[in-house]
Length: 369
Image (tube, rainbow, N blue to C red):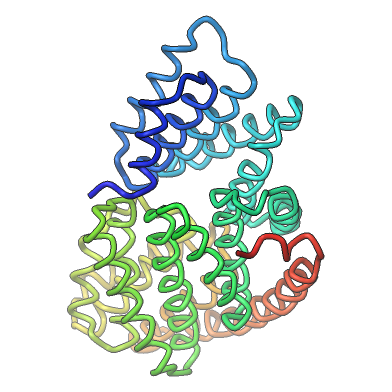
């Protein structure tokens, strides 16, 4: 099923006589296809633009082309090239003072900065995107709203994230961008599941939150099936297995883990993946798997890892090691888990305060529908 936005872009592509408008529509089409997991089609659209401007790219065309290529790499999981193309697009837009692209480039750079844990940069790019975007620039405003919503959710403030998720929905609906709605649904479920698993590992059982996260995950998966989006297919099993472990459904969780392609998971997520394997294996009395995955999880803990993930992994491994009789190492891991959990809660508090400053900025209000 082709979204309304794709249909509108097709109409522009086949009717416009303006070369820049045509290139922008082609590149936006490529970006949308890439976000839906249609990599080959996206590459074809990008190739067509490059071929048509083989004699030389104007700054206006180069911006949209770089942005489309960046989003293509983002969808493919190549975050180095994603960042490189985004920075090129942003640099060209600023140097050429090309207003139609500035806000969109800044919004995507906010996402890149958030993924790279460079939160001061993220806030600066969000302020720029929300301040520069025109009222009807749904592409820029929708993306910036989603990044800000996710940031508030990461900070543990879903109450503050909710209006920005709603703004995302409104912008996506306004132009028929079903891929953005898909991303929003998945992100809501993912952040809620992450909060639930973190609390569960530390001994708190958020039953209502777990139930809501499971419903949201099912809703996100059903929506993706309905619109034909493939981009989150590899991540849904990871989302589901976290909740299954919280519910104590270890066989089902192990089945989900076995379906996952670890190459598609960011390196900072490997420790939790291995710890979940070890946890399920222990509860299922699969001692060979326990012996295989505990050392892998311990090794992955030596890599850079976020404090909430570190606390989670340490708690899960401590429980398994204590059951195995290794009380000394289990104690060390519990102590580290406590330190990491404190560090994470301190981060959430300061991060939320920083985001509230952004939310109170006069220019941000213009970003809402």
